[in-house]
Image (tube, rainbow, N blue to C red; front, side, top):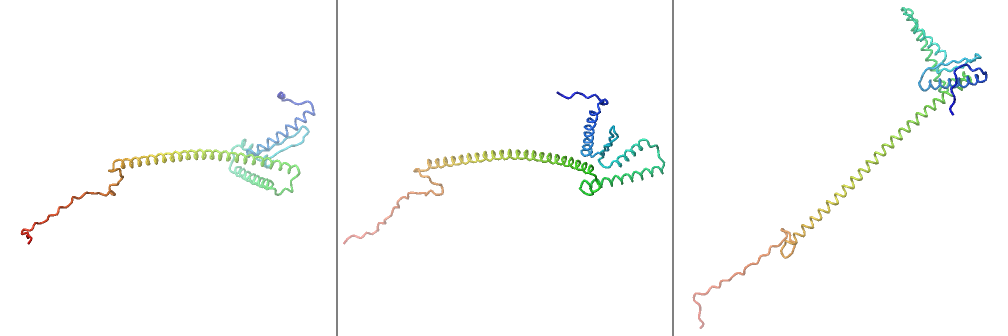
Length: 234
C-alpha cells in the first residue's frame, strides 16, 4: 500500500515534529547540493530550526551570495541614478566581483586539496561530500560515453560484416561465371577440332599452312630421231 497524503499543517507532537524537521532538512540540503553541481547554479540555503539553530549550505560563499541578492533587490527597486550614484554602483559591483573571484579561487584550491588547514571538520565533511558527488557525476558521464562508443563500434562492425558477406557472394558469383565461360570456350574449341577432322581429306587433320600439296607428274615422252641415211650392214 502506498503512503497516505500528509496534511500540511503544524505537527503537534514534539518528537514527530523534530524527526520530520531532521528528515526534510537533510533532503532539502541534499537537493540544494545536487542543484548547484548538476546545473552550475549558485545556491545559498539558510534554515533556522524552532529552537533557533542555524543550518546552511552555500555553493560558493554565503556572504557573497547574500551580497549578490541584496544587489539584485537594489537593482529591482533602484530609481534612476545620476552620474555619481552610477559610478558608485559600478565600483561596488566591481568590488563584489573581485570578492566573488577570490571566493571561487579559494574554493577551487580547496577542491584541489590545497589550503585545508583553516577548515573545520564539518566544512571538510561538506567538501568531501561535494567531491564524491562530483566524482559520481563524472563517472556516470564517462560510463555513458563508453557505452555509446561501444554501441557505435558494434554497429560499424555489423555493417562491415554485411559488406564482407556481399563481397564474398559477388566473388563467388564471378568465379562461377568465369568457370562457365571457360567451359563454353573449351566446348567450342572441341567442336571446331571435330569439324576440321571430319572435313579434311583421308580423315587427316591438316592445317592449311601445314598440308603438303602432292601432285602426280605425267611421264615425259622421249623423242628418238631416225637417221636419214641408215647404214646397212655389210
